Length: 520
Ligand SMILES: [Zn+2]
Image 1 (cartoon, rainbow, N blue to C red):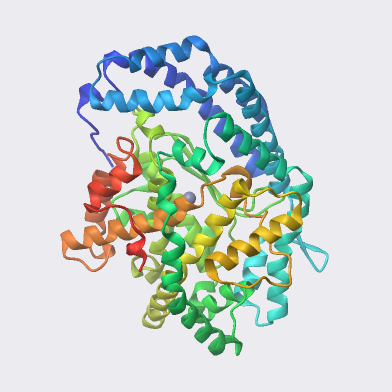
Image 2 (cartoon, rainbow, N blue to C red):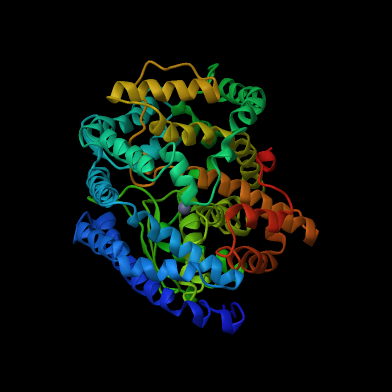
């Protein structure tokens, strides 16, 4: 896709901020090196010098002359866009100029995070004393009719709780708490949200909104528990199974070696040709590789890499579409707008990825897999969409659990379990179970704290984009006019996204303030 972004004179910033751009060029180069190192660590378990690269970055950021350049530019008369650029750069340099104590703590945090992510990436769960991949566990949870087997598969994931606590997870939490205080914030949640240009008020009404939806959600859940399990309550190890009962085609065996063809075909219909980009895929599980799905946007418009763990089932395309959404996004951004790209909200990033992930359930994508039973599959996927939407607000308990680490004094694993159950009770009215809940496997607690809201708010953003587009195009779903939607996504979301904070961008597009009403 050939595009012409911004009026030429202001591309990348005016001459007035030339020196800022030079600083950012060097910073960007170091960032590229760091992502390359992280890619190797996450795909193969080798650490070829991540800590060194953090130190180099730190030395660069805390350099007093560098910071003076940034500060001097803040005092200048600037255009709105240059002002935004200088603000973004100022925000990233400023934390390194508080005190030596803060800088030393920042390095300690990086080091501990790196150690813990190594433990996570190389850990393998065991079932009946045999090593299993998370893909295997997911397949048991979706397909095994024996409830006890599913429970064992679900609980296998708690095997990493103790090693992470032993490895220093709670110390990491304490370091982050201290970091927030040293930066003048009440707590780490407020500190992180400020970094993302979000106000802590955004979460204010969420619990009430969930409570409002709970009766209807519970009704649907117990209805399905009765229908598919003959039980009154749906347990965490039943959820994927019930989904698979609702839509058995989700676990249809597919030929994953042909993944690129299917991904290309979907993105092509939205006007994005994967062959124009350089996206590398590492898709199948192996030892010492992270069990999650990632996009490493190594270098904007040049090099983007996807790590995932799939095998042979249709629903695994969900993660591939999501990560490819990130990959495409990093090629739609403008490599010459390094600063504005730093200002793109995580919510927008995850929103775009979720938007493409959700296309898995649209005929545009799935038709080719289900030529013979198309109508039945379409009905299955409509019911799974309804189910997912009804349950979407449950994510709030995960988001709050992650946040609660930073306002709770957890001394040991038992304290964490207590905290887990108290959040479950508070948000979802779930009584404590007689088992040790898996939590530490969720790598976000370690590497991306206070990040989970991005997926959920990203989903809200998707809904808003879809509704806004349908309204002005007279369509009932975006796949009726995919090319037009791709253009809308590029022009109205991707292109301006770095210029505005998330809240501003949301309002510009929807003409309304952010709210959860789009999820109802
Ligand atoms: Zn993502």
